[in-house]
Image (tube, rainbow, N blue to C red):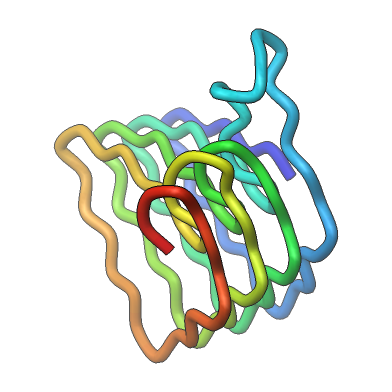
Length: 116
């Protein structure tokens, strides 16, 4: 799933995001977010009661975030069995003047060369 937002409110609830692979147009090193790739600016993004299972990408096997001036929330999510070839097996985040809250989430058996 690829989400791009500018001045938006996005909520994903009770979803199963499983068995996806991100492939970068300019090579594997740019493959952000196997399950979800999110690029946002001045937005609120929320994932609630969502499963991220067995996804893969170069950066952020389960979720890859690249945000500016954004507030992101992961609430009661399960991030399991995701794999990144470079950074962030479960979640990879690059924030510029943004905040993220992770609450009541389980991170299980994710893997990456740098940061599980």
